[in-house]
Image (cartoon, rainbow, N blue to C red):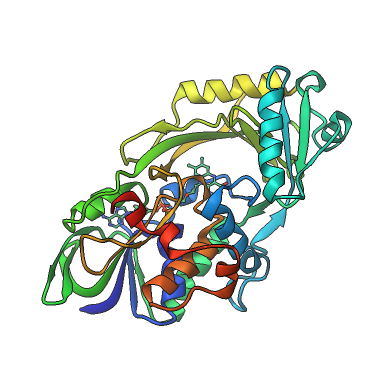
Length: 372
Ligand SMILES: Cc1cc2nc3c(=O)[nH]c(=O)nc-3n(C[C@H](O)[C@H](O)[C@H](O)COP(=O)(O)OP(=O)(O)OC[C@H]3O[C@@H](n4cnc5c(N)ncnc54)[C@H](O)[C@@H]3O)c2cc1C
């Protein structure tokens, strides 16, 4: 078997680049697990924000926003983005961090505004008033229908003549005679190009191709949901500015995250009791809610490179090996923007004019900036 492009990894990164690339190339996407989205993609908070993203991530979020607001015909029958807004607060003692945050964010996101404590309480009545030394509101923040987005990309690959496979592990590849000879499970195939979208395993996949790793760092992040005793569907994302702690409505339940970022080897991450306990403690300190019983708990890996910006570009030390890695905590929300930019770089096409207007550049995304 011979394909133009082999995409390794069936999370949101592999699915999105495969979707945009399948317009020009024959794509085979392989996922080692028996279900797409088993790792980070299925464990996210589903948040869309540009204001709280930095650098290329913010530009990529904005580039992909129209896709989420109005997806192409036939992509999905569900809305992909629902605006929920974001309340941000600082408790007493953290005013300086809040003011620093606002000075930074207002420079690029003018919709973010300071709000009075009463306005924050009108939106989130169970916050403790004495904990609201500073409050801000970001109206554009939204919730992404991750499953619909992910499945839309995968379906799109197949509709465009590509193939998506689960339970098929990429075991290694050798460059010879102008193409990669690849071992996939018990099979061998040939491909002109490998796209490494293996998330926390991106360095492992590189090493299996004798490509120099980029020192990607997976960091564990924990979350739980519980029944707060009311329907939490309308609860916006609520962030404690300095600590990274946040909560939000997740269906009728409330989802809570301590904001942890513990370095981890690539693995099937599990929630640790201590991280859950920290999140419960912070929730009970900042709100009048009490957590009696968890509905669910989980952890996932957010994977970063040194400068915490995504990587989308060809390796400098190997032919036809494309890195798509380091999405950190923004891989879902950047996927429509980054998927199309990565596909354009791979297909040697100009970047979309909207990407250039947002100062997205192949150089800023390139692994070369990290020595890769
Ligand atoms: C708690 C939490 C909250 C988050 N909240 C948000 C949020 O609100 N908004 C947002 O945009 N992002 C969020 N993120 C980040 C987001 O989930 C990630 O950035 C994104 O899912 C990364 O996608 P990925 O495709 O790179 O990785 P993954 O989804 O992990 O996909 C990589 C896939 O590659 C496969 N693979 C690895 N090696 C091989 C191999 N050898 N052969 C075949 N397959 C292989 C793996 O099995 C895996 O399925 C959050 C993450 C966590 C953990």
